[in-house]
Length: 500
Image (cartoon, rainbow, N blue to C red; front, top):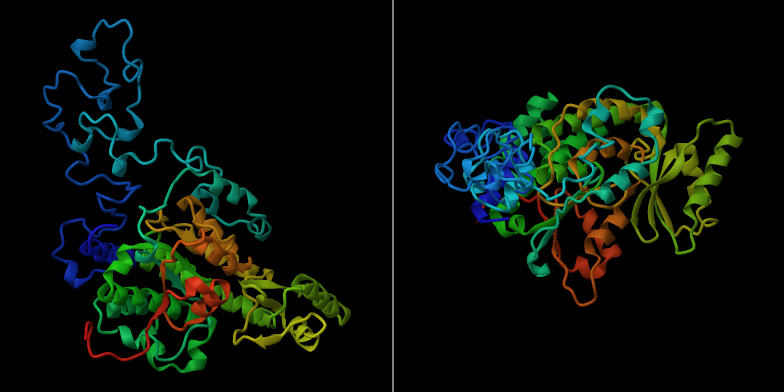
């Protein structure tokens, strides 16, 4: 991704472009403004460098050129050398619109002067992704309110659009042992005292100050001192895990900057997916925090509306989870309950599931665990059936929070909770984040997608960013060989100062 200095600058841009850091006030004008993309090395940059944008005079390389470059085709008055030509070149014949590389640009940038093939930084892909050309799923699909039934529609059409996309986000080839994968945890990983190990690193306190303004309460104080029962509430723990996980990347960028440089994939569990998207450059930190706030508040309301919860289940190869859920729903109906929900909410690892739904259904499964060949069951300390239809009331508030956000093409591949595949284009991210609320998290599938490789090929280093080591434990059960390269970026221990 470039030099260490570039990686640190890019990391800061990913996380906090809306906060006016004092240390950045002397930076070049526009260097960290909203929507700014680095002018070099970042495929898909929408904005050309300032020295090129809106240039009134063509660059010197073009002045007086006897044979104008192809990029100037489309001029109303072709140069004399071409006048009278019976068969004008295709680039000039009847061209009313400038070539795609320069569409909307009054004067072509210097980098394109005389170049037969425009540089990758500006040209984008040779053939625009199909999801952009006449896309059936533009961001406008989220403008305004949709019926819950529409939001619950099958996402096969979106998956097809992703598979058809020709955008290639595969990073440059490098040795697997020099590559890194960053994993961002979700709700349930929070603990009182988290973020204490991060406070001496640049920008961390500023991130928490920004969170204080967005949330309306002191998030850092809650992370450091609790109380635990307040921190564990959905409305508080989701923003806490989100901000702490991104603050951990600041620590990593100082202690091991090559881990940022060589990142080849990121994934986040549930709310952790928002942190992964911010790290990848697809979302702005402050805007994403507003969305996380709206998400947490809506999920808290949905949880309070129906007595529900989540049950961790360790089964056996012949355990039939769907049959167990169906029979639990039938039991609840037999005792007079209506609209009962009981579904697999998380696919964690082989024979590891989280089942969520009405409390009565989960209690039935615990009482009959032997019947379904469950080795162990445990109620999780959450008050809602996340990633099931019981979260449907939270979809519209999140949709409204996301509809005005600007989603950019990720710089690093981000893997989606819904299908375990990477996002191939920014235009579908918003819709999938909404659908994630009522869809199971396919984390096991995500781990297979990231770490699948031919025999004999080494695995990348894996770093868990944020509180706890739950994702490391899951990785160990999914892929023991990959887990051997795992480590956690500690956010709890108090340190004297960075680098000591």
